[in-house]
Amino acid sequence: MKTVDVCLSPDLIHLYDVTDKVVVVVDILRATSCMTTGLANGVKSITPFENLERCEQMKSRGYLIAGERNGQKVDGFDLGNSPFDYMKDHVKGERVAVTTTNGTVAIEKSRKAIEVVIGSFLNISTVANHLKNQQQSVLILCAGWKGKVNLEDSLFAGALVDLILGDFDYETDAPLLARASYLNMKDDLLRQIQQSSHARRLNKLDIVMDIAFCLKRDEYDILPRLVEGELTI
Ligand code: MLT
Image (cartoon, rainbow, N blue to C red; front, top):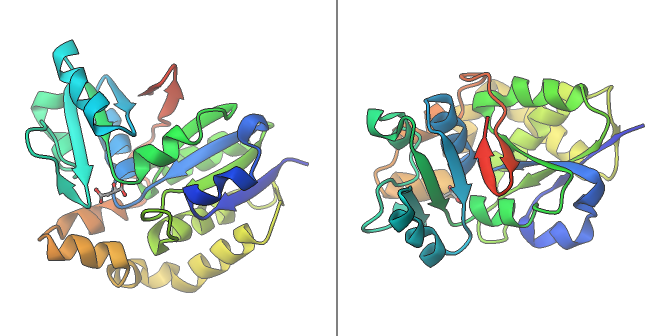
């Protein structure tokens, strides 16, 4: 039977063999929420870069460049890392190169997977249906914060495990832990996640509206996939 597992931090990815798995990368606040929003709003492709300088060089190739470090927009970049940046008319039809603190790092570490898909609450049912309709085992990779576990990505992992339960067997205890946490918090998710370290970090930067938006369920019915280094739908 195909299995589902949860890797709570990219720093633990060396413990997993991704070569025979579909990896769902999640960074709820805010990288994968932004990627899902951008592709749903007409962005042609999103190319993730772990390295800021390599991302910046894409400007000369006609890409819009999106950059975030420690939750703040990188000076001189076209976009920051707010989903509302990706809804603007000027990004429609454009190719975007993006680098973020954790989300693009997690994608980079997933590249040897059979398939890399982008998960967020914004497209969670589309991701779940895709996973149920294919035969490979799945690893949900939480972007976390600089190698540390975070609440919002772990709760997303639990929500996704809860949706695909029955079609998958558990590989380790992480899916059990994530699902139990989600079931315990799901009825008060916004308030719970507003207490998270990253929500508090964003609030200190006067970034408030993003958090509620990133928790909206099934706002979009798209499945961003990494194809030849680019995220497309
Ligand atoms: C990340 O990559 O960890 C996040 O996207 C940071 C942010 O909130 O922009």
